[in-house]
Each structure stands twice: as C-alpha cells, then as structure tokens.
Amino acid sequence: MTSVRSRIYLASRSLRRRELLKQIGVAFELLLMRENPRRGADVDEAPLAGETPVAYVKRIAQAKAETGRRQVVMRNLPASPVLAADTIVVLDGEVIGKPDNAQHAQQLLRRLSGETHQVLTAVAVARKDHIETALSTSAVEFRELGDDEIRRYVASGEPLDKAGAYAIQGRAAVFVRAISGSYSGIMGLPLYETAELLRRIDITPI
Image 1: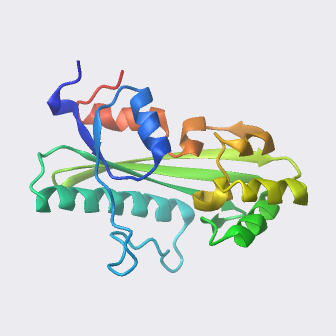
Image 2: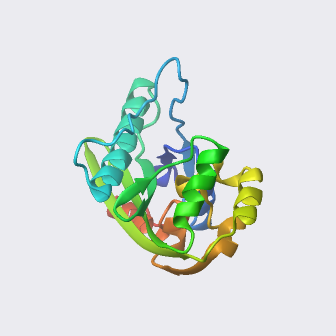
C-alpha cells in the first residue's frame, strides 16, 4: 500500500504523464496550472535571448515545479513534493513548439519528414525550498512523409496540442523509423530519470 507520505502533486494537464506515473506505481494528485488567457499563464514559456534548448527546457520544468510548490502553500494544501515536466522537439538546434493551428502542424511535420530530431524532456521535483532536476535527451528519425498522409494525420486532431506536432504513442508511430533514447521521455515523462529523482526524496516507485 502506498503511504500518504509518498504521495506527490503532479503539476501537469498531460494525460500521458498521468498514465506514466500510474505505470510505475506513484500515487499523485493533480495540481492544475492556470490557462485562462484573460488572467495569464502561471508560467511564461517564452524563450530568453540566446537561451539554448537544454537551458530552456530545464528552466521551464523548474518554473512549473516552483509555481506548483507556491500554489500548495497558498491553497494551504498538505505539504508534498511537486513534480513537473516540460518536453520540447529540437531540429537543427531550433526548438519546434506546439502548432498554432492545423496549417502550422502540417508545416512542422513537413520539416520533420525524412529528418532526425531530438526530443528533450526535463523533469523537476520541488520540495520545500529545493528543486531537483533531471534531463532526458532522445533522437527520433522520421521516414519521408507524403502530403496526403500529413493532411490526414492533422485532420485527426492528434498533433494539435503536441510538441513537434506529433504523438509517438499515437498514430504518428508509423512515421518513426528509429529512436535512440527514452521512449517514455519522448512521450513526455522519462521514467528512469523520474524514478531516480523520486528516490532522492525517499519515494520508491513500484
């Protein structure tokens, strides 16, 4: 049985991250970030001038975890560690974010077609005044994609809220010729790195 002491907060709306945490037996409660355009986002995800992809993804994951920790305090919630993560796709040194719309998604997928890109996922755990961070870096090789299949994939709606405009665990699996690195990291939460972070704060998965 998982004890109350080992419960964490997950500061993410990602269904994939929830499923991956459940896969390794980690008990968690959702701590949702604000996404009301009129009130503004809890975390500003705009890149800084001259910021490298690695520095960027680590900074955003840390900011999400720290924001979550502050929310726990402000809401007078039971004190538990806050886990957050951020995933980016990088092609030729450029961060490829989430598509703005269907047309943009098609453009991003055409850029990834026949190329090898990197997927970086940073995981951060905030506990009191301390934040631990880990980084997973993977390479994904796409085969050449036809315009018709790109249009069909985008029409499915799957890529519209995904970094790089695709989900490797979904229909886009047929685009992938090879991967090197962490499959769960490409999905959005590298389980090895996550488990190592949790062990540092005396939470043992599985």
